[in-house]
Length: 435
Image (tube, rainbow, N blue to C red; front, side):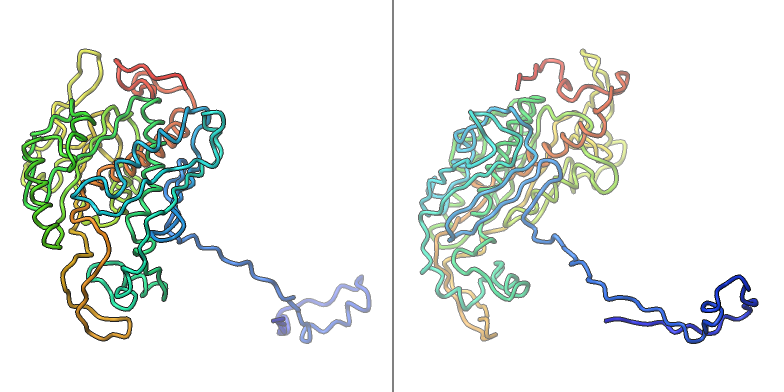
């Protein structure tokens, strides 16, 4: 709408200059009107979709449990890195449903296709599009859940937020969304491995009341083969059997249990992370806590560190045989002041029991009527065995993003050799691959 401003007589005005034209001299300031033309306001764009992660290594996932398929777009991947669909498939196979009796019986091969960003076997530096089709949907299993909310599930909150939701399979709240994360994480892992020899490994350290004792797994030597040697992904054979038995017990009763996934990072470059709001542990916490069913995060000594004194908790420094500054203990978890120090990064992620169970539960309908719901569908009795590659993926994505940030800010110009090391040579015995 046009507006006008009527001016008041200017107090203290001097006599008009005689050199001014008679037209100007005859102008009445009291009747002066200033017109403002209508202005078209620019639309304010708010990016709040919540499906994109990262700043430099940027990942967007898409798709729903019972839609045509799921996948991801990876933007910012460096060029000239060898990459094939089989590189991604190895990790997707670890995540896929129906892989054992203690996972959901839904049968999906999760076969991936790369549609862009790779040419003649190497990345081109342009966005990488990965797609996985859905082939084993059973939408009729969700008939009751179309009107009633599953307790502790996202059904109700999706309705509260959007006023509508995809009922079949839980839509975007389904763990099937994590296919895009695992595929992206596979690319991030390849970048980290080839640039600095960085390894990201996760394993199950607790299932319900079966808790792997501290120090029962050697983080310096544990291997992927040891983790993958059993269906629960615990590298300790004795405790693995106890965990499997615990899952079997609730599975046959139509119930569910939770657990904990421990993740470690070996050979992480020093200097990753930024002070204050972008501390590395804060970025890692956000990443893994964005996974479905997560309820807790511990880093380094975690909550147990609150029982120690400063003299007991501090990690004392020393110089090793290569002249590298190290710490004798690692209660800091490989990060101090929000920045990686070169020690093994370690964290633990708690997952709740699966919300959808085959037992009657009290709930309400969309019309606010109280009823009893017996949920159907195919669901994991315990999510942690399949959560292992998901946690690895999110951690790898954070580290790849932080590696690019560190290279751009602190390694763009010559480093201070007295205090810094090249990112790809943080460990004297590692020789980076040619990429």
